[in-house]
Picture 1 (cartoon, one colour):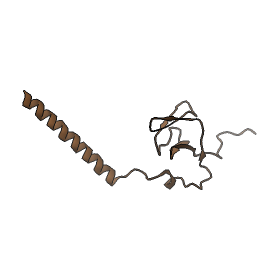
Picture 2 (tube, rainbow, N blue to C red):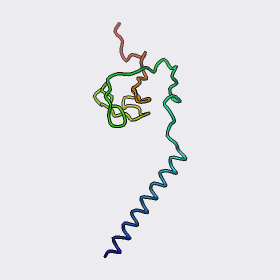
Picture 3 (cartoon, rainbow, N blue to C red):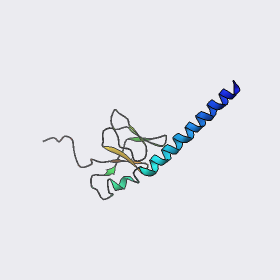
Picture 4 (cartoon, rainbow, N blue to C red):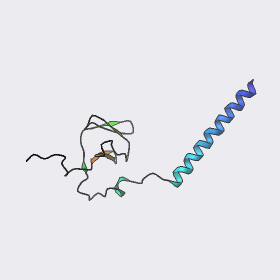
Length: 102
């Protein structure tokens, strides 16, 4: 009975090691985006600092809309309007109003 438990533990350890190796290979072939600046250059007039955020565990929480998205570094919000860039929220649609009064 003791050998069965040991072999099961060894099997789980081997599976965990194989999963870690597979993840490392996957990241080496498909690296995550380096920075947000490659997608939206700093001189883009539509990218401005955003407000209504609170720090959260390893990221920021946007409090602008009812979704209250958690945004880790480089993540885009559900509304596609806010992004976490360098630990700060940026708005991507600054001079583009959704509605205007005549």
